Length: 306
Picture (cartoon, rainbow, N blue to C red):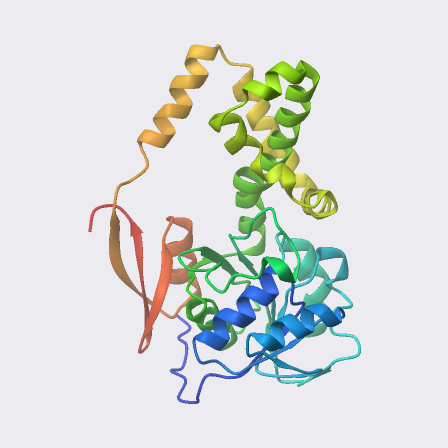
């Protein structure tokens, strides 16, 4: 069993590349938590907004470097920047397997894939919110080649931002978010388009259920398209499962969906997990999350009564 050494050094600095909603919010949250943060964005307005929130602006980055850029820009995000060769690199992309395939060969165990499950339909630096990550689940990938001390350093960044860390592999992450994020974006688009075909009266009568079901349609279409196409295989499989459910008799479908929601465990059971890849992945697969560091262990919770 591989154990993580207990770090004795101070928390490393954090570099954030991309200062839009996610990157700008992360940089602001970390500054508020007392972390040393340097940020960069190609947009001068985004740089100015981050600087006003206490973020140091610069091209020289080290410690933990976070790529908060769109998926198509991920491969070239570090071009023209002075990145410490020893830095740990992570990202906030909504799909993990393609990013791992792009960055993994060059970065090896220095790369730790991440995806915070937060954000809104808004985008850009004007949507920055230092509280965006508070209580959010942040998937953090543990591949066979991931260097565990680096994984822990990225986990500490997520925890300092207020999130809870869910260990997973890239493939497990992509399968899971296809079901709970990517397909819902497609269903929201389909629901909105179908309601539009129903005419002005239908739209005028739309209330809470329609508003909740279509909220994410306001997201940038290019972002959503890149997300679902970047995770095409798992999203297609998840969408097929949804279509299979819709083919069921309606009373059965309604009852089945209600049963899933009703069976959700109430409460949280606190746990301590050793700093070991197998144990951490088991926590994530069971629906648990890491909430803090405790010597050679992490503390967290599993679903269920405390």
